[in-house]
Length: 205
Image (cartoon, rainbow, N blue to C red; front, side):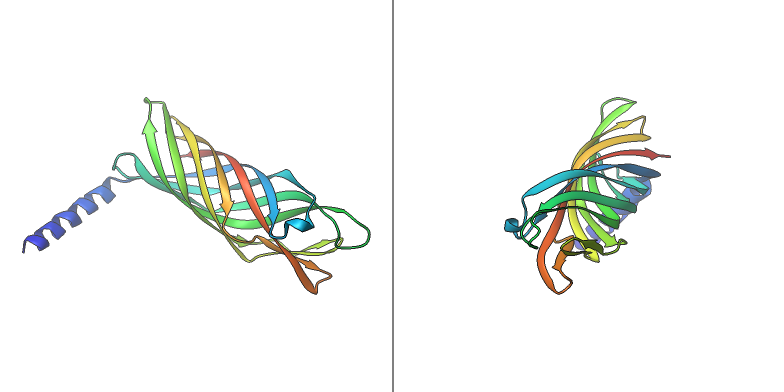
């Protein structure tokens, strides 16, 4: 009987907390600085960072439990990079710019700390799932084939202004391959991974 009472109390406390949760909708966009890496490091001479971008709707849920909350978004994201690849053909080194286009869905746990009525700071971290919407890219030496689904981990810091405007900087680690590189469409020669610095601006209603 005592266990049932504790369970009932916990249930009502959870319902009260959820009722007090504050939800805000908005839009977020920004720029990413992307680096491209490969499984077979012998097939690369140089990795050059190239800017990309992302934009889409977002939602933020603030739970009255010591500044904890969650945020999620559905964004169109394009990551660009440039690399030099030697030795695949007799002509020597080839410089290629590639892009990875996807619908990205990040889900972050966040901690907010309000400095005063206007300014606040927050930290966030969480997983991201991406669904490819781009096409295969023809290269001088073969083909760049994006994977249909990608997984990444995001983490970063940000500031809030008047509880409406947010500026953040973070890093996104790829948890698997983002693309495969095929030679003459017959032989897979490598797998590519995107990691990114991300700088965003968000506005919430």
